[in-house]
Amino acid sequence: MPNPFENAMTQLNKVAKIKNFSDEFIAHLHEPNKIKKILIPIKMDDGSEKAFEGYRVQYNDALGPYKGGIRYHPLTEINEVKALAFWMTLKCAVADIPMGGGKGGITVDPKNLSKGELERLSRGWVRGLSDILGPHKDVPAPDVNTTPEIMAWMADEYAKITGDKTGATFTGKPINVGGSLGRENATGLGGFYVFNSLREQIKLPKKCTIAIQGFGNVGGHAARIFTENGHTVIAVSDSKSAIFKKDGLDLKKVEAHKKKTGGLKNFEDAKNITNEELLELPCDLLVPAAFENVITDANASKIKAKAILELANGPLTPEADEILFKNNIPIIPDILANSGGVTVSYFEWEQNLKQEHWTEKEVFKKLKQKMEKASKEMLEKAKEYKTSLRMGAFILALERIQQKML
Ligand code: GLU
Image 1 (tube, rainbow, N blue to C red):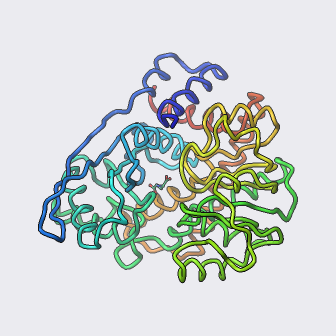
Image 2 (cartoon, rainbow, N blue to C red; image 1 turned 120 degrees about the horizontal axis):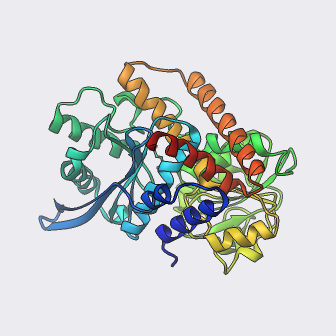
């Protein structure tokens, strides 16, 4: 398995060859400001005690407080968290929000925990790290397998420990405890706004066929939003299986089927395929919305999509990136494509600090403006430096960060 942090650093070294950033600046960005590892002991329901490893990486805060989600996954480890924290730094800069980059995680399979155990673990993560968190220090949020409910437990624990009244230390909270309207579908919607801004540039038709890898919070909402806007979702997958129907899937029925059977398999007359096969389907747009490193040098040359929208973080290895670039398959990079989530997290933080409540309409309007502006600016950089959209986004982000660090 390629190391995500090495991949991230390969991207950074590549951009340094395209634009002349100072060596010192690039060297600085090869290391996070702070890495904190903790052990979280919790009481299990059967009375035994078990300890889990937790992390927070604070990568860079030149633009504002560290910002980024917390991932619960059995494969989560420090190199992944470091890579994700680095990408958060660039993501906030591309979206032009005044926040830095951080990321957290716990090595755990939350499916093996009861609700009580999950709550104790989440509160334990906050207890172990509360001294480095805070509305003006570090503001975590949900990521893979972490929910608004978990954010509510964490925000509550943090308030108990510190007496903080702003509620602005965690974002992605449920609406009744200070969450923002629109946060839940913000990543998918932001991705759609970005896609729409760039669609003509990347020569895609008005109505696209789309294959989406991942049917969770990001992929599920994206599938719905693209369908509502006239596109046809021909394939979706979850961690276990994938389904494909050439003339389009009825997503409401797919959701009902998943609820009923616990998976996607054997949905009506759709074809059961593998996750790997989904990535290689002929379609207009491929949307990886699950994990890192799903497109590598092993399958990049088999990709038949006309373009890729990266809603997951780091779904392509640098080698895959090169192959697709040579094959003229444009890639709308993660640090822009999925920045809608953190953008609405920033809106939530702002509302908490100002004690305001914005309507969903207002949130979406502001999100749309941010995504359109960032898409345009990325495209201009890519054109100016005659490079890929990813490198354009990197240049845009790094220029903003460098300016604050000088
Ligand atoms: N975990 C999300 C991401 O990777 C959101 C982070 C946030 O809202 O702070 O962008």
